[in-house]
Image 1 (cartoon, rainbow over the protein chains, first blue to last red):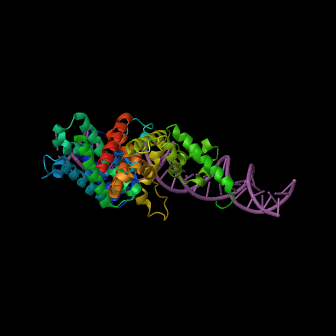
Image 2 (cartoon, rainbow over the protein chains, first blue to last red):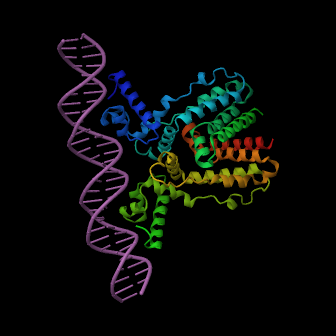
Length: 197
Length: 197
DNA sequence: CTTGAAATGAGACAAAGATCTCATTAGCTT
DNA sequence: AAGCTAATGAGATCTTTGTCTCATTTCAAG
């Protein structure tokens, strides 16, 4: 099934993703059958678009809640990378707290990808939404940083921003939201300044 | 099946966990049937001890590969927190590369705990192995740090060391092992020095 | 409006995961 | 050593997941 009727196909695909996102918001762990029912399509059709529930859940919660760069940096200082990274952090924090169940589900499934890639050749790859935003935040600091340091810093910040950091704070360290934010902002300052020096 | 013949039960339970650990070391994602075969018990018996493969794999790799503090810091400098954190990092890196499939499985399941806690009352809680080691590494720096900074630093380092950071490096950033190590060590320096200042 | 092709729905089918039953084996007590 | 009882093994059975076929619906071009 391909190359036939583009807009019909895009519509049902979108319906499936939205149905999945709806179920995820309820904190459920839906099966592909559940999603098909919620989207009011047949099970067979759902399987025509996604080989399994994991493939669907990788995309589901994210298509909705992507922070847009221009929105994140709206009236943000153009020259202060730390202030700009704080914006990125805030954007991710609010996006994640609104989508925590879906993000946990997504992580739960994508984390197993390497164990399953023996099954069939092509698995959907985990997307990386944070790096473009981090790069954009760091843009003004580009001139004052050595390229090698800029690369190091961007990767380091990717550990601070995102779902995995949320998991560490909540599940491993069991800190509350405000403490977690304090730690992240402290880290942003420490890391950016270290790269500058 | 309970409260009947303690040592026989402990023995087969241990056999199952060891069999699972053996299969995991080969990089496979074993099914409960595989583990039963490896442990030379029947499939039915395996299911009597663990409801599914995930439940087994949460425990399997961890009972074996816990880095012991005294071993990690054997002939490590007593007064250099950075060198000591590098030891912790190295210990986690080697433990994780030897147990990656099991750790991914563990993370995949524990990450869903908040979504499942409605199902039945008691879920095993995620353990925190890194914080004690981080505290031990930082011990010599305690006198030169304000208590608040020490707390901040310990939490920040918990983002750098551990399974979640490995996931970010491998799955999100797709860096190789040596680059990931470079970033972690750079972060350790940046964070410890920031706390000192 | 008609028509041809593509998407869909319904259900049969297959494979894997998990449960259940019951006869047999093997610990533990005496 | 004997007997009771819990644990085990083997296989039947049920459930869930994913595939396949074919009739029906629906889109869109003419």
